[in-house]
Image (spheres, helix red, strand yellow):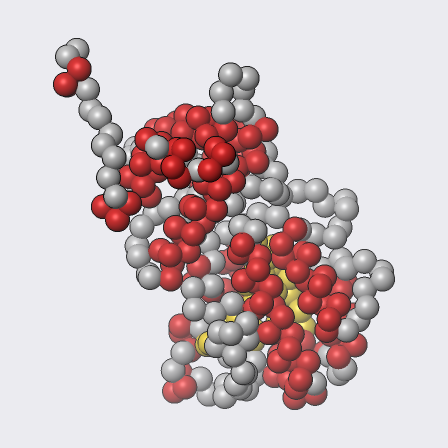
Amino acid sequence: MPTEDIPQTLAKHWQDCTDVYDFLEQIRLRPGMWLPGGSLHHLQAILVGYQVALGVHSVQESCDFWDGGAFSQWLGKRFGGNSPRGWAHDIERNTPEGSTPVEEFFRLLDAYRSDAAPGSEPGVRRGWPGIEYMSDTFVTLFWRKRLFTEAAQRLGERGFRVIHLKAGQWNTERDMHRAIAEALDFPGYYGHNLDAFNDYLGDVACYGSYDEADDAPEGAGLVLAFTDYDRFATTCPRAAQVVLDIIAGQARRASVFDRRLICLVQSNDPRIRFEPVGAVPVLWNTDEARDDRRG
């Protein structure tokens, strides 16, 4: 075949790329410019940022490179499982001699795209699970328990570990600490105060469970689902506010580690309000965003 008949990928500005695969072709073309030291973890961070930007700007584009997403699930089937450290680590530890992790990524990317082509059945789920509870706020309010239950169930079905917490049973701040420590397997030396909660939740959100017997991958992320939170907010208003603020702050921090933390809060008071948490507002879910849809 004449050389001029062979399709060539041309270098272009990233702003001229049409989708994530077009963008990845530019990285394939000039990996040294995009990936200092040939770091596959750097590439994973770039793709996480790409997906966050899609969610923030409500761009409807399929992008499957979040840890626990479609590409990660496909790799897990190919490698016989995923590690909690993400797909970049999985590729690195499975890179054959004579290749590099970046070269192996693009070889696997071509195979993944072939499997996911129209008419094929790769057996993986598309999209970015949970983005609807992370794009504008990390803490989402619910009034109707039906909507709250359905949201938690959907996230569970999409691979999240959902922790249910009955806040209406907490009469003191210590009750809250005791319940959360048990639910999240905090170690016995947990200090049962808000500073300790911040520290230990950060460990779970960013690195995984304290349960040493649980060495399974964390899945799509962690959901803290509180019911009857208005009762706790009435009994311990400061602690109730600070807990949500800590969760929001750790959710943002977890995203840097390619992990997800989501908080769902059900309140029997349809007019409950909280101060901003993690520098973002506490918002009602989309079905109950307007006041006239509650109460």
